[in-house]
Image (cartoon, rainbow, N blue to C red):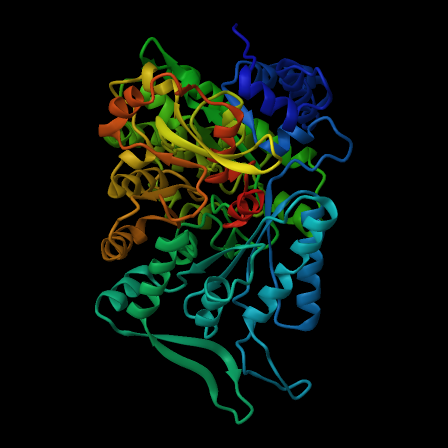
Length: 607
Protein backbone atom coordinates (compact mmCIF):
# COMPACT_ATOMS: atom_id res chain seq x y z
CA UNK A 1 0.00 0.00 0.00
CA UNK A 2 1.48 3.33 -1.11
CA UNK A 3 0.36 6.21 1.04
CA UNK A 4 0.14 9.73 -0.31
CA UNK A 5 1.94 12.78 1.02
CA UNK A 6 1.48 16.18 -0.64
CA UNK A 7 4.54 18.06 -1.80
CA UNK A 8 5.48 21.62 -2.65
CA UNK A 9 2.51 23.88 -3.07
CA UNK A 10 0.07 21.07 -2.24
CA UNK A 11 1.77 20.59 1.09
CA UNK A 12 1.66 24.33 1.78
CA UNK A 13 -2.08 24.47 1.06
CA UNK A 14 -2.72 21.42 3.24
CA UNK A 15 -0.74 22.87 6.14
CA UNK A 16 -2.32 26.32 5.81
CA UNK A 17 -5.97 25.32 5.32
CA UNK A 18 -6.59 21.82 6.61
CA UNK A 19 -3.98 20.71 9.17
CA UNK A 20 -5.00 20.99 12.81
CA UNK A 21 -1.59 21.90 14.10
CA UNK A 22 1.91 22.63 12.90
CA UNK A 23 3.55 19.41 11.81
CA UNK A 24 0.37 17.37 11.29
CA UNK A 25 1.01 15.08 8.33
CA UNK A 26 -1.48 14.13 5.65
CA UNK A 27 -1.57 10.58 7.07
CA UNK A 28 -2.33 11.89 10.54
CA UNK A 29 -5.10 14.06 9.12
CA UNK A 30 -6.46 11.03 7.26
CA UNK A 31 -6.55 9.03 10.49
CA UNK A 32 -8.24 11.96 12.26
CA UNK A 33 -10.98 12.16 9.62
CA UNK A 34 -11.45 8.38 9.45
CA UNK A 35 -11.89 7.98 13.19
CA UNK A 36 -14.27 10.94 13.48
CA UNK A 37 -16.53 9.74 10.67
CA UNK A 38 -16.44 6.13 11.89
CA UNK A 39 -18.15 7.32 15.09
CA UNK A 40 -21.42 6.84 13.19
CA UNK A 41 -20.87 3.07 13.15
CA UNK A 42 -21.81 0.53 15.81
CA UNK A 43 -19.31 0.64 18.64
CA UNK A 44 -17.83 -2.80 17.93
CA UNK A 45 -17.37 -1.92 14.23
CA UNK A 46 -15.84 1.54 14.54
CA UNK A 47 -12.23 0.42 14.48
CA UNK A 48 -12.84 -1.66 11.36
CA UNK A 49 -14.49 1.17 9.46
CA UNK A 50 -11.97 3.72 10.67
CA UNK A 51 -9.27 1.55 9.10
CA UNK A 52 -11.26 1.16 5.87
CA UNK A 53 -11.84 4.91 5.59
CA UNK A 54 -8.19 5.59 6.44
CA UNK A 55 -6.98 3.44 3.54
CA UNK A 56 -9.06 5.40 1.02
CA UNK A 57 -8.02 8.78 2.41
CA UNK A 58 -4.37 7.89 2.99
CA UNK A 59 -3.91 6.53 -0.55
CA UNK A 60 -5.67 9.65 -1.84
CA UNK A 61 -8.24 7.69 -3.81
CA UNK A 62 -10.93 9.70 -2.02
CA UNK A 63 -10.97 13.09 -0.32
CA UNK A 64 -13.67 14.56 1.87
CA UNK A 65 -14.73 18.12 1.17
CA UNK A 66 -12.73 20.99 2.59
CA UNK A 67 -15.05 21.34 5.59
CA UNK A 68 -14.54 17.66 6.45
CA UNK A 69 -10.76 17.89 6.10
CA UNK A 70 -10.69 20.98 8.30
CA UNK A 71 -13.38 20.14 10.84
CA UNK A 72 -13.07 16.42 11.53
CA UNK A 73 -11.66 15.81 14.99
CA UNK A 74 -12.72 19.18 16.36
CA UNK A 75 -15.39 19.52 19.07
CA UNK A 76 -18.86 20.28 17.72
CA UNK A 77 -17.50 19.96 14.18
CA UNK A 78 -19.57 21.44 11.36
CA UNK A 79 -18.48 19.34 8.34
CA UNK A 80 -20.83 20.57 5.62
CA UNK A 81 -20.01 23.17 2.98
CA UNK A 82 -23.27 24.88 2.05
CA UNK A 83 -26.96 25.13 2.80
CA UNK A 84 -30.18 26.47 1.30
CA UNK A 85 -32.64 28.38 3.47
CA UNK A 86 -36.23 29.36 2.67
CA UNK A 87 -37.94 32.69 3.08
CA UNK A 88 -41.55 33.64 3.58
CA UNK A 89 -43.46 36.69 2.43
CA UNK A 90 -43.72 38.41 5.79
CA UNK A 91 -41.61 40.56 8.09
CA UNK A 92 -41.29 37.57 10.42
CA UNK A 93 -40.19 35.40 7.49
CA UNK A 94 -37.60 37.94 6.43
CA UNK A 95 -36.23 38.14 9.96
CA UNK A 96 -35.96 34.35 10.25
CA UNK A 97 -34.13 34.10 6.94
CA UNK A 98 -31.60 36.79 7.84
CA UNK A 99 -31.04 35.08 11.17
CA UNK A 100 -30.48 31.74 9.40
CA UNK A 101 -28.00 33.34 6.99
CA UNK A 102 -25.97 34.90 9.79
CA UNK A 103 -25.87 31.71 11.88
CA UNK A 104 -24.78 29.58 8.91
CA UNK A 105 -22.21 32.11 7.73
CA UNK A 106 -20.84 32.31 11.24
CA UNK A 107 -20.28 28.56 11.09
CA UNK A 108 -18.35 29.01 7.81
CA UNK A 109 -21.11 27.69 5.58
CA UNK A 110 -22.24 29.07 2.24
CA UNK A 111 -25.92 29.93 1.73
CA UNK A 112 -28.31 29.60 -1.20
CA UNK A 113 -31.51 31.69 -1.22
CA UNK A 114 -34.40 31.99 -3.67
CA UNK A 115 -36.31 35.25 -3.13
CA UNK A 116 -39.15 34.32 -5.51
CA UNK A 117 -41.72 33.80 -2.70
CA UNK A 118 -41.54 37.55 -1.93
CA UNK A 119 -44.44 39.46 -3.48
CA UNK A 120 -43.35 41.98 -6.13
CA UNK A 121 -42.77 45.69 -5.68
CA UNK A 122 -46.00 47.68 -5.65
CA UNK A 123 -48.19 44.93 -4.15
CA UNK A 124 -50.83 46.10 -1.68
CA UNK A 125 -50.33 44.71 1.85
CA UNK A 126 -53.84 44.23 3.17
CA UNK A 127 -52.71 43.65 6.75
CA UNK A 128 -51.28 47.12 7.29
CA UNK A 129 -52.37 49.04 4.23
CA UNK A 130 -48.80 49.46 3.01
CA UNK A 131 -47.11 48.79 -0.30
CA UNK A 132 -44.58 45.96 -0.67
CA UNK A 133 -41.03 46.90 -1.62
CA UNK A 134 -40.50 43.61 -3.43
CA UNK A 135 -38.12 40.70 -3.79
CA UNK A 136 -35.08 42.83 -4.61
CA UNK A 137 -35.60 44.84 -1.44
CA UNK A 138 -35.32 41.67 0.60
CA UNK A 139 -32.35 40.46 -1.46
CA UNK A 140 -30.49 43.63 -0.41
CA UNK A 141 -31.35 42.97 3.24
CA UNK A 142 -30.09 39.39 2.95
CA UNK A 143 -26.92 40.63 1.26
CA UNK A 144 -26.17 43.32 3.86
CA UNK A 145 -24.77 41.14 6.70
CA UNK A 146 -21.89 40.21 4.42
CA UNK A 147 -20.27 43.59 4.86
CA UNK A 148 -20.18 43.23 8.63
CA UNK A 149 -19.10 39.58 8.55
CA UNK A 150 -16.14 40.49 6.33
CA UNK A 151 -15.26 43.54 8.38
CA UNK A 152 -15.53 41.78 11.72
CA UNK A 153 -14.12 38.35 10.98
CA UNK A 154 -12.05 38.88 7.88
CA UNK A 155 -13.97 36.17 6.01
CA UNK A 156 -16.53 37.06 3.40
CA UNK A 157 -20.01 35.61 3.29
CA UNK A 158 -20.60 33.15 0.44
CA UNK A 159 -24.08 33.40 -0.98
CA UNK A 160 -26.27 32.62 -3.97
CA UNK A 161 -29.37 34.75 -4.45
CA UNK A 162 -31.69 33.70 -7.25
CA UNK A 163 -35.09 34.77 -8.63
CA UNK A 164 -37.55 33.11 -11.00
CA UNK A 165 -37.47 34.42 -14.55
CA UNK A 166 -41.28 34.85 -14.42
CA UNK A 167 -41.24 37.00 -11.26
CA UNK A 168 -42.44 40.58 -11.93
CA UNK A 169 -39.29 41.95 -10.26
CA UNK A 170 -36.85 40.08 -12.52
CA UNK A 171 -35.70 43.16 -14.43
CA UNK A 172 -35.12 45.11 -11.21
CA UNK A 173 -33.18 42.10 -9.87
CA UNK A 174 -30.84 42.08 -12.86
CA UNK A 175 -30.40 45.85 -12.79
CA UNK A 176 -29.52 45.87 -9.09
CA UNK A 177 -26.41 43.72 -9.54
CA UNK A 178 -25.45 44.44 -13.11
CA UNK A 179 -26.14 48.17 -13.47
CA UNK A 180 -26.29 49.55 -9.93
CA UNK A 181 -23.37 47.67 -8.34
CA UNK A 182 -25.50 46.21 -5.55
CA UNK A 183 -25.78 42.69 -4.07
CA UNK A 184 -21.98 42.53 -4.03
CA UNK A 185 -21.77 39.86 -1.32
CA UNK A 186 -23.68 37.37 -3.45
CA UNK A 187 -23.58 35.58 -6.75
CA UNK A 188 -26.89 36.02 -8.56
CA UNK A 189 -28.73 33.65 -10.86
CA UNK A 190 -31.96 33.58 -12.82
CA UNK A 191 -34.13 30.49 -12.31
CA UNK A 192 -35.96 29.08 -15.33
CA UNK A 193 -39.17 28.07 -13.56
CA UNK A 194 -41.29 27.23 -16.62
CA UNK A 195 -40.79 24.31 -19.01
CA UNK A 196 -37.48 24.93 -20.74
CA UNK A 197 -38.89 24.02 -24.15
CA UNK A 198 -41.50 26.75 -23.68
CA UNK A 199 -38.89 29.28 -22.60
CA UNK A 200 -36.59 28.45 -25.52
CA UNK A 201 -39.45 28.76 -27.99
CA UNK A 202 -40.50 32.13 -26.61
CA UNK A 203 -36.97 33.44 -26.96
CA UNK A 204 -36.42 32.11 -30.45
CA UNK A 205 -39.77 33.36 -31.72
CA UNK A 206 -39.50 36.70 -29.92
CA UNK A 207 -42.70 36.11 -27.96
CA UNK A 208 -43.74 37.81 -24.75
CA UNK A 209 -42.97 36.27 -21.38
CA UNK A 210 -45.68 36.84 -18.78
CA UNK A 211 -44.34 37.98 -15.41
CA UNK A 212 -46.94 37.03 -12.82
CA UNK A 213 -47.13 36.57 -9.04
CA UNK A 214 -50.31 34.77 -7.95
CA UNK A 215 -52.43 36.84 -5.60
CA UNK A 216 -50.40 40.06 -5.84
CA UNK A 217 -52.57 43.14 -6.45
CA UNK A 218 -52.08 46.88 -6.33
CA UNK A 219 -54.10 49.19 -4.10
CA UNK A 220 -56.93 49.30 -6.66
CA UNK A 221 -57.15 45.49 -6.83
CA UNK A 222 -55.40 45.11 -10.20
CA UNK A 223 -53.11 42.07 -10.58
CA UNK A 224 -49.39 42.83 -10.41
CA UNK A 225 -48.26 41.44 -13.73
CA UNK A 226 -46.66 42.51 -16.97
CA UNK A 227 -45.23 41.09 -20.15
CA UNK A 228 -41.72 41.50 -21.52
CA UNK A 229 -40.01 40.27 -24.63
CA UNK A 230 -38.46 36.90 -23.79
CA UNK A 231 -35.74 37.56 -26.35
CA UNK A 232 -34.95 40.97 -24.87
CA UNK A 233 -34.66 39.47 -21.39
CA UNK A 234 -32.53 36.58 -22.64
CA UNK A 235 -30.23 38.92 -24.55
CA UNK A 236 -29.72 40.96 -21.39
CA UNK A 237 -28.78 37.83 -19.44
CA UNK A 238 -26.40 36.69 -22.19
CA UNK A 239 -24.81 40.12 -22.58
CA UNK A 240 -24.00 40.34 -18.89
CA UNK A 241 -22.82 36.74 -18.64
CA UNK A 242 -20.52 37.54 -21.59
CA UNK A 243 -19.33 40.75 -19.90
CA UNK A 244 -18.56 39.49 -16.40
CA UNK A 245 -19.90 35.97 -15.80
CA UNK A 246 -23.15 37.00 -14.12
CA UNK A 247 -25.95 36.20 -13.88
CA UNK A 248 -25.84 32.44 -13.93
CA UNK A 249 -28.88 30.59 -15.20
CA UNK A 250 -30.38 27.80 -13.08
CA UNK A 251 -32.75 25.40 -14.78
CA UNK A 252 -35.18 24.95 -11.91
CA UNK A 253 -37.70 23.21 -14.11
CA UNK A 254 -35.20 20.49 -15.09
CA UNK A 255 -33.91 20.18 -11.53
CA UNK A 256 -37.40 19.51 -10.20
CA UNK A 257 -38.32 17.32 -13.15
CA UNK A 258 -35.36 15.09 -12.16
CA UNK A 259 -35.86 15.49 -8.40
CA UNK A 260 -35.77 12.06 -6.72
CA UNK A 261 -37.94 13.34 -3.84
CA UNK A 262 -40.41 15.18 -6.07
CA UNK A 263 -43.23 13.82 -3.90
CA UNK A 264 -41.69 15.13 -0.65
CA UNK A 265 -40.17 18.58 -1.17
CA UNK A 266 -39.42 20.80 -4.17
CA UNK A 267 -35.89 22.01 -4.90
CA UNK A 268 -35.77 25.78 -4.44
CA UNK A 269 -32.19 26.94 -4.98
CA UNK A 270 -28.62 25.79 -5.46
CA UNK A 271 -25.73 26.40 -3.11
CA UNK A 272 -23.33 29.27 -4.03
CA UNK A 273 -21.29 27.18 -6.47
CA UNK A 274 -24.32 25.63 -8.13
CA UNK A 275 -23.35 21.95 -7.77
CA UNK A 276 -26.37 20.94 -5.69
CA UNK A 277 -30.02 21.89 -6.02
CA UNK A 278 -31.54 21.70 -2.54
CA UNK A 279 -34.87 21.65 -0.80
CA UNK A 280 -35.42 24.13 2.03
CA UNK A 281 -32.85 23.59 4.80
CA UNK A 282 -30.89 21.22 2.59
CA UNK A 283 -27.13 20.77 2.89
CA UNK A 284 -24.03 19.94 0.83
CA UNK A 285 -22.20 16.87 2.15
CA UNK A 286 -19.25 16.75 -0.25
CA UNK A 287 -16.41 14.41 -1.14
CA UNK A 288 -14.53 13.55 -4.31
CA UNK A 289 -12.98 10.56 -6.05
CA UNK A 290 -9.41 11.44 -7.10
CA UNK A 291 -9.70 10.02 -10.60
CA UNK A 292 -6.01 9.81 -11.65
CA UNK A 293 -5.43 7.36 -8.78
CA UNK A 294 -7.47 4.81 -10.70
CA UNK A 295 -5.25 4.83 -13.78
CA UNK A 296 -2.96 1.81 -13.65
CA UNK A 297 -0.60 1.06 -16.54
CA UNK A 298 -2.58 3.24 -18.91
CA UNK A 299 -6.01 1.77 -18.10
CA UNK A 300 -8.78 2.46 -15.57
CA UNK A 301 -8.83 0.07 -12.62
CA UNK A 302 -12.57 -0.44 -12.60
CA UNK A 303 -12.48 -2.92 -9.72
CA UNK A 304 -10.72 -0.47 -7.40
CA UNK A 305 -12.97 2.37 -8.54
CA UNK A 306 -16.03 0.31 -7.63
CA UNK A 307 -14.66 -0.45 -4.17
CA UNK A 308 -13.77 3.18 -3.50
CA UNK A 309 -17.20 4.42 -4.64
CA UNK A 310 -18.88 2.08 -2.15
CA UNK A 311 -16.65 3.18 0.73
CA UNK A 312 -17.03 6.87 -0.18
CA UNK A 313 -20.84 6.60 -0.13
CA UNK A 314 -20.70 5.08 3.35
CA UNK A 315 -18.22 7.74 4.51
CA UNK A 316 -20.43 10.63 3.34
CA UNK A 317 -23.56 9.04 4.79
CA UNK A 318 -21.74 8.80 8.12
CA UNK A 319 -20.83 12.49 7.93
CA UNK A 320 -24.54 13.31 8.11
CA UNK A 321 -24.77 11.31 11.35
CA UNK A 322 -21.76 12.83 13.13
CA UNK A 323 -22.15 16.42 11.94
CA UNK A 324 -22.98 19.28 14.29
CA UNK A 325 -25.61 21.24 12.39
CA UNK A 326 -25.92 25.04 12.51
CA UNK A 327 -29.74 24.98 12.71
CA UNK A 328 -32.23 22.41 14.06
CA UNK A 329 -34.29 22.70 10.87
CA UNK A 330 -31.25 21.65 8.84
CA UNK A 331 -30.56 18.71 11.15
CA UNK A 332 -34.16 17.50 10.85
CA UNK A 333 -34.32 17.84 7.07
CA UNK A 334 -30.94 16.25 6.41
CA UNK A 335 -31.86 13.26 8.57
CA UNK A 336 -35.11 12.87 6.64
CA UNK A 337 -33.55 12.91 3.16
CA UNK A 338 -29.86 12.02 3.80
CA UNK A 339 -28.66 13.76 0.64
CA UNK A 340 -24.95 13.34 -0.11
CA UNK A 341 -22.73 14.73 -2.86
CA UNK A 342 -20.05 12.34 -4.09
CA UNK A 343 -18.10 13.98 -6.90
CA UNK A 344 -14.74 13.82 -8.63
CA UNK A 345 -11.57 15.77 -9.06
CA UNK A 346 -8.86 15.31 -11.65
CA UNK A 347 -10.98 14.32 -14.65
CA UNK A 348 -8.66 16.17 -17.03
CA UNK A 349 -5.61 14.77 -15.26
CA UNK A 350 -7.04 11.27 -15.72
CA UNK A 351 -7.74 11.83 -19.40
CA UNK A 352 -4.19 13.03 -19.99
CA UNK A 353 -2.76 9.99 -18.20
CA UNK A 354 -4.92 7.82 -20.46
CA UNK A 355 -3.56 9.65 -23.50
CA UNK A 356 -6.91 11.27 -24.37
CA UNK A 357 -7.55 14.91 -25.21
CA UNK A 358 -10.21 16.62 -23.12
CA UNK A 359 -12.44 17.46 -26.07
CA UNK A 360 -12.08 13.95 -27.52
CA UNK A 361 -12.95 12.11 -24.31
CA UNK A 362 -16.74 12.52 -24.27
CA UNK A 363 -17.55 8.84 -24.90
CA UNK A 364 -15.11 7.68 -22.22
CA UNK A 365 -16.50 10.24 -19.77
CA UNK A 366 -20.02 9.02 -20.52
CA UNK A 367 -18.97 5.45 -19.70
CA UNK A 368 -17.05 6.51 -16.58
CA UNK A 369 -19.88 8.51 -15.00
CA UNK A 370 -22.49 5.90 -15.83
CA UNK A 371 -20.31 3.39 -13.95
CA UNK A 372 -19.93 5.70 -10.95
CA UNK A 373 -23.69 6.36 -10.94
CA UNK A 374 -24.63 2.69 -10.98
CA UNK A 375 -22.14 1.74 -8.27
CA UNK A 376 -23.09 4.67 -6.02
CA UNK A 377 -26.76 3.71 -6.15
CA UNK A 378 -25.93 0.06 -5.56
CA UNK A 379 -23.85 1.06 -2.53
CA UNK A 380 -26.71 3.15 -1.11
CA UNK A 381 -29.10 0.21 -1.46
CA UNK A 382 -26.65 -1.99 0.46
CA UNK A 383 -26.49 0.66 3.18
CA UNK A 384 -30.30 0.72 3.32
CA UNK A 385 -30.34 -3.03 3.90
CA UNK A 386 -27.99 -2.51 6.86
CA UNK A 387 -29.08 0.83 8.31
CA UNK A 388 -32.48 1.57 6.80
CA UNK A 389 -33.73 3.86 4.03
CA UNK A 390 -33.88 7.62 4.40
CA UNK A 391 -37.08 8.39 6.38
CA UNK A 392 -38.81 10.25 3.54
CA UNK A 393 -38.39 7.26 1.19
CA UNK A 394 -41.56 6.08 -0.56
CA UNK A 395 -40.74 3.10 -2.76
CA UNK A 396 -43.55 3.56 -5.28
CA UNK A 397 -43.14 7.31 -5.72
CA UNK A 398 -39.34 7.22 -5.61
CA UNK A 399 -39.35 4.65 -8.39
CA UNK A 400 -41.41 6.97 -10.59
CA UNK A 401 -38.71 9.62 -10.58
CA UNK A 402 -37.23 10.41 -13.99
CA UNK A 403 -33.63 10.16 -12.84
CA UNK A 404 -34.31 6.84 -11.13
CA UNK A 405 -35.75 5.54 -14.38
CA UNK A 406 -32.41 6.29 -16.06
CA UNK A 407 -30.74 3.66 -13.87
CA UNK A 408 -30.32 0.09 -15.02
CA UNK A 409 -33.31 -2.25 -14.46
CA UNK A 410 -31.24 -4.17 -11.90
CA UNK A 411 -30.66 -1.11 -9.73
CA UNK A 412 -34.29 0.00 -10.02
CA UNK A 413 -35.40 -3.49 -8.97
CA UNK A 414 -33.27 -3.66 -5.83
CA UNK A 415 -34.30 -0.14 -4.81
CA UNK A 416 -37.91 -1.31 -4.86
CA UNK A 417 -37.01 -4.43 -2.88
CA UNK A 418 -34.64 -3.04 -0.26
CA UNK A 419 -35.05 0.75 -0.33
CA UNK A 420 -32.16 3.23 -0.51
CA UNK A 421 -30.20 5.10 2.14
CA UNK A 422 -29.83 8.48 0.41
CA UNK A 423 -32.30 10.55 -1.60
CA UNK A 424 -29.51 11.67 -3.95
CA UNK A 425 -25.84 10.76 -4.12
CA UNK A 426 -23.83 12.48 -6.83
CA UNK A 427 -22.61 15.97 -7.63
CA UNK A 428 -19.80 17.78 -9.42
CA UNK A 429 -18.29 20.42 -7.14
CA UNK A 430 -15.46 22.76 -8.20
CA UNK A 431 -12.87 21.28 -5.74
CA UNK A 432 -10.77 24.39 -6.41
CA UNK A 433 -8.50 24.31 -3.36
CA UNK A 434 -8.78 20.68 -2.35
CA UNK A 435 -7.62 19.47 -5.78
CA UNK A 436 -4.41 21.46 -5.37
CA UNK A 437 -3.38 19.30 -2.42
CA UNK A 438 -2.96 16.19 -4.64
CA UNK A 439 -1.95 18.39 -7.61
CA UNK A 440 -4.72 17.31 -9.99
CA UNK A 441 -7.15 19.27 -12.15
CA UNK A 442 -10.26 20.58 -10.39
CA UNK A 443 -13.65 18.88 -10.72
CA UNK A 444 -14.39 18.14 -14.37
CA UNK A 445 -12.64 21.30 -15.54
CA UNK A 446 -9.74 21.30 -17.97
CA UNK A 447 -6.58 22.88 -16.62
CA UNK A 448 -6.81 26.66 -17.23
CA UNK A 449 -3.72 26.87 -19.45
CA UNK A 450 -0.50 24.87 -19.92
CA UNK A 451 1.34 28.08 -20.85
CA UNK A 452 0.23 31.48 -19.59
CA UNK A 453 1.32 34.97 -18.64
CA UNK A 454 1.08 35.63 -14.93
CA UNK A 455 0.48 39.20 -13.73
CA UNK A 456 1.15 40.30 -10.18
CA UNK A 457 2.17 43.42 -8.28
CA UNK A 458 5.53 43.48 -6.47
CA UNK A 459 7.21 45.91 -4.08
CA UNK A 460 10.06 48.06 -5.39
CA UNK A 461 13.05 49.56 -3.59
CA UNK A 462 11.43 52.99 -3.39
CA UNK A 463 8.35 51.57 -1.62
CA UNK A 464 6.02 51.72 -4.61
CA UNK A 465 4.44 48.74 -6.38
CA UNK A 466 4.78 47.78 -10.01
CA UNK A 467 3.17 45.21 -12.25
CA UNK A 468 5.29 42.13 -12.89
CA UNK A 469 4.52 39.84 -15.84
CA UNK A 470 6.10 36.40 -16.17
CA UNK A 471 5.58 33.40 -18.44
CA UNK A 472 4.59 30.23 -16.59
CA UNK A 473 4.82 26.75 -18.13
CA UNK A 474 2.92 24.08 -16.19
CA UNK A 475 4.35 20.60 -15.75
CA UNK A 476 1.64 19.13 -18.00
CA UNK A 477 3.17 20.95 -20.97
CA UNK A 478 6.14 18.57 -20.95
CA UNK A 479 4.52 15.57 -19.30
CA UNK A 480 1.53 15.23 -21.65
CA UNK A 481 2.70 17.22 -24.67
CA UNK A 482 0.70 15.23 -27.23
CA UNK A 483 -2.68 15.57 -25.51
CA UNK A 484 -2.47 18.58 -23.19
CA UNK A 485 -5.00 21.37 -23.70
CA UNK A 486 -6.04 24.39 -21.69
CA UNK A 487 -9.54 25.68 -21.10
CA UNK A 488 -8.98 28.37 -23.72
CA UNK A 489 -7.90 25.78 -26.32
CA UNK A 490 -11.19 23.87 -26.13
CA UNK A 491 -14.17 24.93 -28.21
CA UNK A 492 -17.13 26.50 -26.45
CA UNK A 493 -19.42 23.74 -27.65
CA UNK A 494 -17.05 21.08 -26.27
CA UNK A 495 -17.32 22.74 -22.86
CA UNK A 496 -21.12 22.61 -23.12
CA UNK A 497 -21.03 19.02 -24.36
CA UNK A 498 -18.84 17.86 -21.47
CA UNK A 499 -21.15 19.39 -18.88
CA UNK A 500 -24.29 18.00 -20.52
CA UNK A 501 -22.73 14.51 -20.79
CA UNK A 502 -21.78 14.41 -17.13
CA UNK A 503 -25.14 15.86 -16.00
CA UNK A 504 -26.92 12.81 -17.49
CA UNK A 505 -25.42 10.72 -14.71
CA UNK A 506 -25.57 13.20 -11.82
CA UNK A 507 -28.70 13.36 -9.65
CA UNK A 508 -27.71 16.67 -8.05
CA UNK A 509 -26.05 19.21 -10.36
CA UNK A 510 -22.78 20.03 -12.11
CA UNK A 511 -20.57 23.02 -11.37
CA UNK A 512 -18.54 23.84 -14.46
CA UNK A 513 -17.27 26.99 -16.12
CA UNK A 514 -17.93 27.42 -19.83
CA UNK A 515 -14.82 29.23 -21.05
CA UNK A 516 -15.21 31.77 -23.84
CA UNK A 517 -12.55 33.36 -26.07
CA UNK A 518 -12.28 37.10 -25.56
CA UNK A 519 -13.82 37.83 -28.98
CA UNK A 520 -16.50 35.12 -28.89
CA UNK A 521 -19.64 36.46 -30.61
CA UNK A 522 -22.48 37.18 -28.21
CA UNK A 523 -25.02 36.02 -30.79
CA UNK A 524 -23.35 32.60 -31.01
CA UNK A 525 -23.38 32.27 -27.23
CA UNK A 526 -27.09 33.15 -27.07
CA UNK A 527 -27.96 30.39 -29.54
CA UNK A 528 -25.61 27.71 -28.21
CA UNK A 529 -26.72 28.32 -24.64
CA UNK A 530 -30.35 27.83 -25.67
CA UNK A 531 -29.39 24.57 -27.42
CA UNK A 532 -27.90 23.12 -24.25
CA UNK A 533 -30.26 24.69 -21.70
CA UNK A 534 -32.54 21.61 -21.62
CA UNK A 535 -29.62 19.39 -20.57
CA UNK A 536 -27.98 21.47 -17.82
CA UNK A 537 -29.27 22.34 -14.36
CA UNK A 538 -27.04 25.39 -14.15
CA UNK A 539 -24.58 27.40 -16.26
CA UNK A 540 -21.61 29.61 -15.50
CA UNK A 541 -19.33 31.45 -17.92
CA UNK A 542 -15.93 33.05 -17.96
CA UNK A 543 -14.66 35.05 -20.93
CA UNK A 544 -10.91 35.43 -21.09
CA UNK A 545 -9.90 39.08 -21.07
CA UNK A 546 -13.19 40.24 -19.57
CA UNK A 547 -11.57 41.56 -16.39
CA UNK A 548 -9.04 44.35 -16.25
CA UNK A 549 -6.76 42.78 -13.66
CA UNK A 550 -6.75 39.14 -14.73
CA UNK A 551 -3.97 37.30 -12.89
CA UNK A 552 -3.40 34.88 -15.76
CA UNK A 553 -3.65 35.21 -19.55
CA UNK A 554 -3.43 31.96 -21.54
CA UNK A 555 -1.04 31.68 -24.47
CA UNK A 556 -2.83 30.20 -27.53
CA UNK A 557 -1.90 26.59 -28.24
CA UNK A 558 -0.34 27.39 -31.62
CA UNK A 559 2.04 29.88 -29.97
CA UNK A 560 3.28 27.82 -27.02
CA UNK A 561 6.64 26.84 -28.48
CA UNK A 562 7.28 30.24 -30.05
CA UNK A 563 6.55 32.21 -26.89
CA UNK A 564 8.62 29.88 -24.71
CA UNK A 565 11.57 30.21 -27.09
CA UNK A 566 11.29 34.01 -27.08
CA UNK A 567 11.37 34.17 -23.27
CA UNK A 568 14.18 31.67 -22.83
CA UNK A 569 15.90 32.23 -19.50
CA UNK A 570 13.01 33.98 -17.77
CA UNK A 571 10.31 31.32 -17.99
CA UNK A 572 8.88 29.88 -14.75
CA UNK A 573 8.41 26.10 -14.95
CA UNK A 574 5.84 24.48 -12.69
CA UNK A 575 3.40 26.35 -10.47
CA UNK A 576 4.39 28.73 -7.71
CA UNK A 577 2.13 30.26 -5.07
CA UNK A 578 1.47 33.43 -7.07
CA UNK A 579 0.37 31.44 -10.11
CA UNK A 580 -2.00 29.29 -8.11
CA UNK A 581 -3.47 32.36 -6.40
CA UNK A 582 -4.44 33.53 -9.85
CA UNK A 583 -6.04 30.21 -10.72
CA UNK A 584 -8.02 30.21 -7.48
CA UNK A 585 -9.31 33.66 -8.30
CA UNK A 586 -10.91 32.24 -11.43
CA UNK A 587 -12.45 29.28 -9.61
CA UNK A 588 -14.60 28.49 -6.58
CA UNK A 589 -12.42 28.42 -3.51
CA UNK A 590 -12.78 25.67 -0.94
CA UNK A 591 -16.28 24.75 -2.06
CA UNK A 592 -17.49 28.33 -1.57
CA UNK A 593 -17.65 30.46 -4.67
CA UNK A 594 -15.89 33.79 -4.79
CA UNK A 595 -18.07 36.83 -5.25
CA UNK A 596 -17.28 38.23 -8.74
CA UNK A 597 -15.09 41.32 -8.91
CA UNK A 598 -13.89 41.05 -5.31
CA UNK A 599 -10.40 39.86 -6.22
CA UNK A 600 -9.93 42.43 -8.95
CA UNK A 601 -10.76 45.18 -6.45
CA UNK A 602 -8.04 43.78 -4.19
CA UNK A 603 -5.51 43.78 -7.02
CA UNK A 604 -6.50 47.28 -8.05
CA UNK A 605 -6.02 48.51 -4.48
CA UNK A 606 -2.58 46.88 -4.34
CA UNK A 607 -1.53 48.67 -7.50
